[in-house]
Image (cartoon, rainbow, N blue to C red; front, side, top):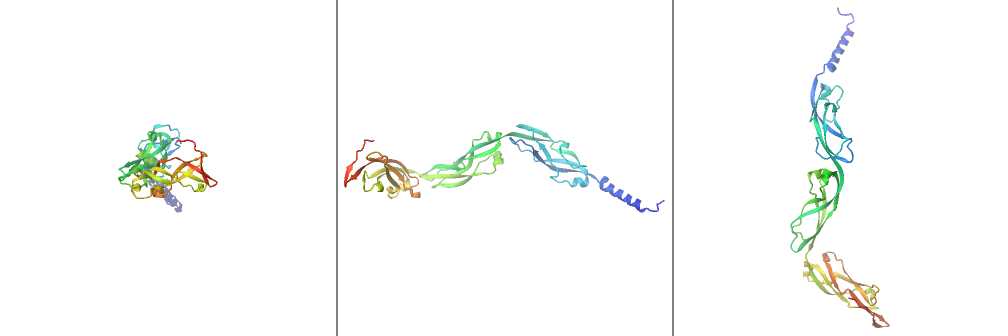
Length: 317
């Protein structure tokens, strides 16, 4: 009963068997895949303030080769928040919410819902506050700590930032310090702030000064080069009362050399105003403070035709 030309029917039969095996006869298998969450269309003035699940488990079913060929990232779960408002939102994970290739179906999604806490997005300027412990060395004191920057601007959820006014640093230990220094200090951040700005450090300029003693320095000369030859100043010296670091005051130094005394003509007949400044000799006059100068006004006489004539001086306290 074989046809004379059996070649063509045999080839057709072979192709049918092969097609059945690769398409219709392929085994159906199940597979669980971790699917990432993709949030889209979140309004600009809102922020997700809670730690929501970044992945969900999806069980899919379909032809073996097609299902086994699906890897993590080939499927995503998109969550559209275009109409979100501040508050808590519960998004159900329905089977049809997962897009899969044709021929593959979703059997199960775990968890069955996602929870989002939405909050207003605000920006706030927070001052940086140093935290210290310990005391400087004897006869020294902490004069000031200046932070750089003095404040940090943070953008984040209103619920996180509303109650905050300052950002505190980790503890700065000033125990036994005898001189000023500059330090890099990390901020002490809550987990919520750490998520917003990450680990952050600031610069602390720590000013340590030595205790000062009050000294009266007599006979500090007035520098009057520009008036030499035509005016004579009375008195020619002043007394300066100053707060001077203990070590500097204890040493046998000429304290007069710390100061530069000049006079200013303020167009008042017969008198000039005294100005006292530190010479700016670096560390030698560091921490010196001028407290009082006596007298504040000096008199002068004009030399005319080789003689000194006293100028009339109005009374002044």
